[in-house]
Amino acid sequence: MIAGLVIGFVVIVILAIAGDIRQVEKTVLAFDWRVYPLVLLLTLFNYALRFIKFHYYLSLIGASNITWLQSMRLFVAGFPLAVTPGKVGEALKGAWISQRSNVSVGRGISIVVAERISDGLAVLLLSIVGVIAYPQYWLAFLAVFFFLIAIVALSQIRPVALFLLGLAGRIPIVKRFSGGLYEFYEGSFWLFRPLPTLLAVGLGTVSWLGEGLGFYLILVGLGMTPGVQLAALAVFILSFSTVVGAVSALPGGLGAAEVSIAGMLALLAGAEAALASTATLLIRMATLWFGVSLGLIVWSFSLELLGLKHVRSALERLEIGK
Image 1 (cartoon, rainbow, N blue to C red):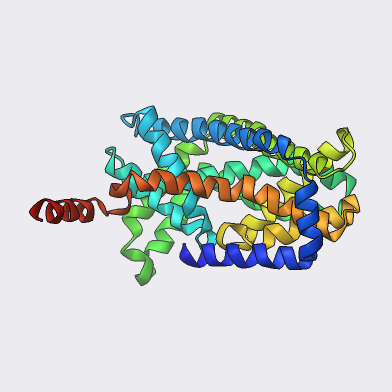
Image 2: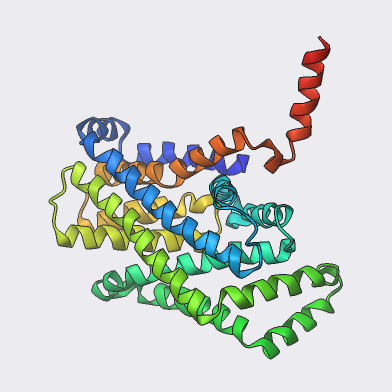
């Protein structure tokens, strides 16, 4: 995660340099900061709907004993894990779920994967209009879309899925994890049933639309002409860039998502370099880094999530001893 934070800082510096630091500074100062609280509220709207999906997923895998408050804490605490390569750090959420319920870690991790896939399908749906308008993006769109659909479909064809798991279990390095893989599959089977999938993708589409509208407000705050066309373009650019960032497997999509947002703003909206760089910085601060900050705040009073509660207890005993 530390590497991800370092990369994030480097990306911010590169964006500022690419847009000419002086011009970026002028653009930031000219930005209508009155719209930024609304952008953050739309990000919170996105988080709220995704949290509802997360809590719903918990009930589907049998972790219904986790309360809404506990569930919210786990959900927000998972945000900083997004800046790990390929977001693999989010697998830690599976361990947190297991610690607070009677489900296995494998089933807990199935929620993390289901979240990513349902979110991926949601942002792809939001990208459809833009892809129709700009057909050069069709190939990438279809490749990711059919890959995600294939995973969902395979999870529902139990004989084939079990057969593949059996083959994987024969590989020495995989064999020791075969039990966890079967638990992961059982969780995925229920999470990817038709009704839960439709509900999850529906919630995801509305929630990610919120962030797209937040990006639209940023573009308007930077002086771009407001209107339906700009709103549609903002939703498309942010949605498609989210897919690019996820596919890149870079920590938090860092670098890939920023280049995609700034590049598409310049190519499709005719934005100048300084405006494109500033808009990219502002939306990433209001989405990725806003979420990471919220998660770190939760970590500060939830040391048991990081296995550090015993360290605090030891320090308190030392303090009492003094």
